[in-house]
Length: 284
Image 1 (cartoon, rainbow, N blue to C red):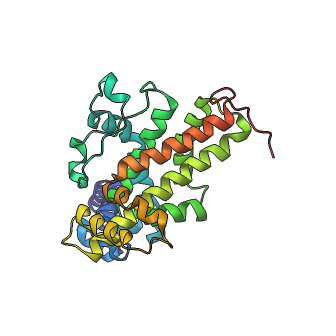
Image 2: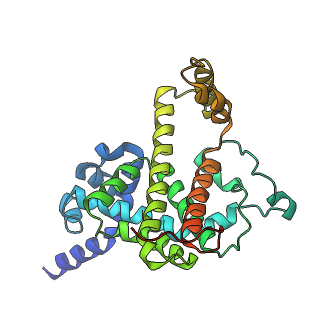
């Protein structure tokens, strides 16, 4: 009996909750939410279902844990990873508009420089917000199942671990910007909703493009879409026709950063007296 107990303890210790969550993330990445079953998980881990149920009660708990693990890793690792990816810009180059970068697959991102940044300190609140944003951008791009789970977390259980992690990471920097306390929640929410919305839409665009034309690369897909826009009726769609070439040439990460900077500019203009020559508006 003692020997059997020790073997059971060794199996429980070897099959940790962390290993189960890691295997769940691998299954989600390769097979999607539909492919995450306890049967598939037991096969991947070479164990029985009872050993897994010892650590997680059901699939919902497993999805929440997988989401938590991916988000925590993204928020923790991104500042260092982003610093390694970025190439230092020359002072003169920083004054010029950011050059358009060629689209790269996720595996090649580490070899590509980030878009040119405004001239804040690397430790500025703005730059830390961009670091958090790019961490989530890359996590969502690498894990196509993540946007759905993030949306569920924000709407269904904002008291869970994921939503507070994201809000805390952004909110601390909003506070460091000097935004008045009465506007912390609104300013942080605006940034969080933009970041998650834009990254999720970008992931959906990429997934749709791959499903629609798996043998066509991104440049070819955008070129076809741009040509279709240029052929629209000029009376009904004058704006769409005017920006068709910009859509063809845009870089997803540059566009994402531009949106963050627009939100940050709005926050500082509205809430930091004298920052943009505008007073703080009265509370409504």
